[in-house]
Length: 218
Image: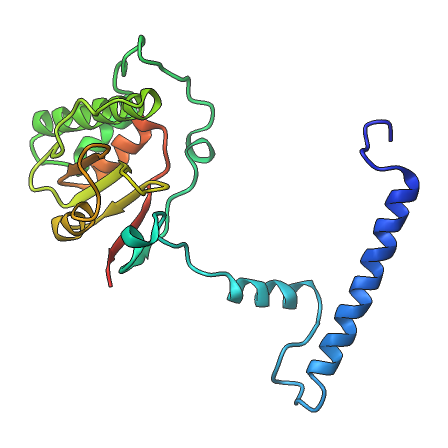
């Protein structure tokens, strides 16, 4: 117990208070459900019952921006799992290292990009490079080196940085992206657009981020 920030007496006091709180909650729940049928209302129940209630009360992720920018958007698809959860301990490459060669398994994603293998691999390579340099731009607080549109027609948009934005987001149409862009200045914007979600996914892998949540206008 030498590393514990609390003394034995303080720990006993915490336990005692928790027991009192549990008793108080139980009394409140009993009172609030009095007169109701067993099939309605909130029941204390076991861990599973409480878990279901908590799950129902959790709100959908909100648009990660200040109110003037966040207003009027609805979530279409939640963000993907964290980068490290999916890819594990991928070696980090910094500014001096450059993006490096495209991994073979990433090149294999070309089958989902274009029927022409050569064209598809070029687009995968460009998405891989764009993701790396976008991350460097974020880390160094500099402008992005790549143009907005990476491949045509642009239908998958990702925004990594913008004034008033507090996270990464993506849109599924130029209309939605233009509506967002109209609310923020161009000076701090880091965004990319791709013809396919596959290229967007490669971009995110190279940028070492999860695939962001997808939003559309309400």
